[in-house]
Image 1 (cartoon, one colour):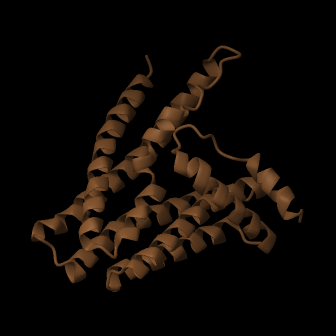
Image 2 (cartoon, helix red, strand yellow; image 1 turned 60 degrees about the vertical axis):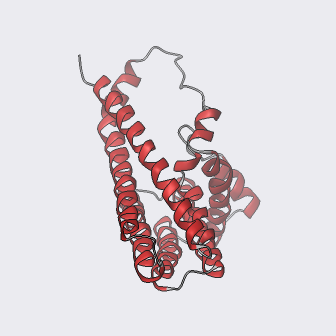
Length: 246
């Protein structure tokens, strides 16, 4: 094994494109994941084992949201665990690219964990609202369900967009004129995507000690994610329609 510094340099050279990635993921989560990937490499962990570590941090935090009385301390612990879990979620892919040990099984496991995370995070909030919330109205119980719908549809539609468009995009790329280049990464888009970034969403749990503030922040993010869903669905539908053969 090389030194940690050598491993980090190799990981920096094996990053995915920053296109379509928010500033948080690009400048916070991916660098944190790179450090964790280097540590996992030195410890001899496989990418799939790193995925399971990510799941352990994330699911433990969500269980705490559902089962423990909200407080400032709980909010800090939950946020820290979710942030670490998200960083490990980046580390597994980075480790796979570094070691060449990635494969369909690892990609499948990663998506299963992510899907479970999106379902459980809003289910945990719903349970917390019901058990501890002292809500102004029972209508607030519908909010996590709506947020969950927006998050899961966005996740599944994005995966379908990627898979359905992959073959057509590959064919178009092979027919593209020599010397054509990919569009540059947009800094404006990276900023605009911040409210939809899971890492930014996790920040709302720091407000667990103030139930009213948490509800307001969670509701605001639900509205933002719903608006992003509408924009993404429109964009992806148009892109897929444009890929239809002549």
